[in-house]
Length: 336
Image (tube, rainbow, N blue to C red; front, side, top):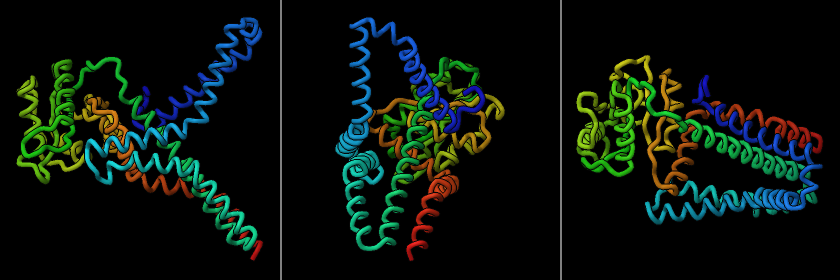
């Protein structure tokens, strides 16, 4: 975290820390077992906790799938139907299918194929192995992505002698700043008050359905709600997050100084990854939003991250799948 928190290594390190602490506690319980086994009440409590933990681990995939489905339905009912709003619902259904349906389906197909044709059996085996490897790969990466996103939101102090504060736009309605964007701007204003030398940059160009550039509407709202007019400027050319950063950098008071990127919590980590690509020294601050919306939006951010790193993802997948590919080819050649 001190070196460079803007990568999945931060989440990987946090995961290793959690696992390490868990193993340490387990080893301490084993090492000093003679002391707690002599205490009947303490033994009963530890056994109950262990049983509950095992049951939770066994039920976790089902709980996660059900939770995602419920929250996905809730999001669609409150925010309306769109393909992007179906991510959490779709993932929940996929998890339950992967647990309950796919193993039985693939198993029955493998049994039939084994009785009729070895080549088809090998193909079915390869497809099921590929599905398992891909599911495991992306699930692990999603978990690490979420941990990395969370740990990059932790700041023990907001006064960090910032030089500039960039608030990323998210769309306006005509000239009206919607509540989600208001939350981002208010977070930027709060940081400006705690960093009296920092310039507040409101970033966003004009898009469809917008009567003026986002940055101008954001600046007007910010000044009306307590921002210092002398240290508040608008960036009005950008159309996406990458351009937010590129064009805002031209307005920096100190390009090599400390920069805060302010956006909604689920969007902070991807913005930081982009800032790292652009060699921008930055930390991220997130504005709150509704939980059910955050869950789906975080999945959308993960999909965007996969798109950003698609070449790397394809390379890793090919490496992981290469043993299954080689084994499948050898079995087919052997039985032709």
